[in-house]
Image (tube, rainbow, N blue to C red; front, side):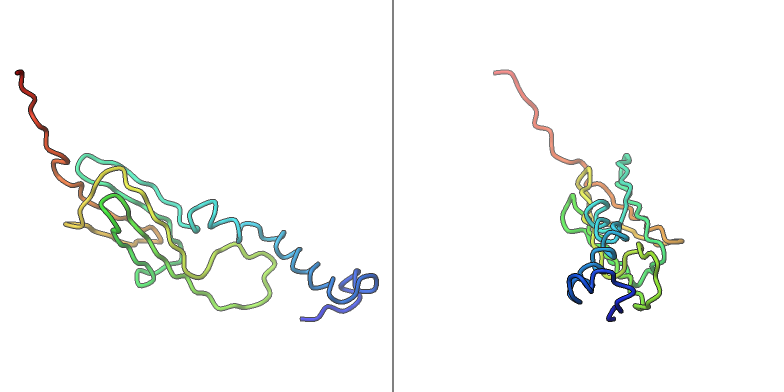
Amino acid sequence: MEENESACPHQRAFGPGMCGMHRRFHEMVAAPVQWMMPVIRGAGIPVDVRDLEDEVAVVADLPGVESGDVAVRLTGPMALRITVRRMEEERGGYAVRERPSGEMTRVVNLPAEVTDEGAAAALRNGVLAVRLRKVPGQGVEIPVREE
């Protein structure tokens, strides 16, 4: 969209190129959350991780997301990856746009080794709850004898 002279006070002094740069700068400053969110909150997916007696529980806030748009994968004995696709139609008219859209991924480091056996994930009212069983009997104690 080309800006007219009255909408861009810099055109007369600096030329039309300055108007586009001026507009882009103001768009960036007006919505810092949009470009900072992945850095601050792990791609916009806040989580709680609980270390329970026999399991690890991970809860993630995913408002406006349906179960078909979420992928949960145990990538190792102590790492869980949550991938979310939130696609929205691009429509103009936004004064502020802070809600992220597109694909977001969060890798969650777990406090204990877990197994995929008996793992469960459910999405209810925009809250993802994942339950993972801890690996039973982590390690084997080796008796020490006197010699």
